[in-house]
Image 1 (cartoon, helix red, strand yellow):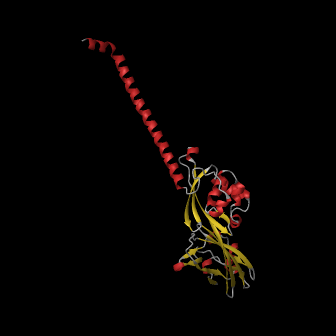
Image 2: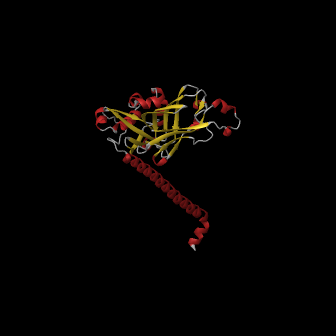
Image 3: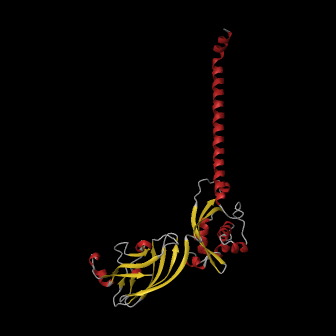
Length: 313
């Protein structure tokens, strides 16, 4: 009876105490859950960070800022990749630029300022960890990562690039930004209308660009391609595989060769880099023999005075 009497007299206080205890228990459980989740995220971040470091296969891989001696680079030429990245990581932009080959500078970064704006400022806004994986021969697949432990950014974007080592008389240089190399060709062929000389090609990871000198032997301006389709200029490779040009990127004026004139044109072909593939021919299959007549016709597909030029390598 005394207990019931006590309960009735103090029931409001008793229930307030019970509810307060329940709230405290729930709060403690919630806080513990948050702490566990945060520890899990940190653990995952550390795990991811360790995975990145494990991918690196260079000396002193725990510190991507330690520079490498020139002697080491000459002995183990792939270390030029590590040296280049470490120069970038430590803000030695001129030294990084000096490691680029002459062809790479000419094609992509003719000045230090262009290299700084178009490559360094984009890819090295922060210190980068990296991995390198051999792709083909002297070309390596490079992945640049943010240092998660320093930035705390677990969702940073991975930058992928392809670097190629160029070695001539122990003068080791590097090509970057998916540029592989320059290959001299010096192939010539002619008929009664055109003389074609393929000077060289620039090889990139995703495409090739050919430098071609073309002489018009006729008394009419010639249009090398009508651009009515995207498959009329192409390379032929192994097993008759065709690699089509990116002629849609060119203007009509780019493809016109004046009467008795010579013109240098640059044509890109949709051919991904593969050291084992060979090119057997260059083919122009929709040449307009009189561009002045052609431009006067409203329905271009009705123009008949067309020819082809097949050049075997």
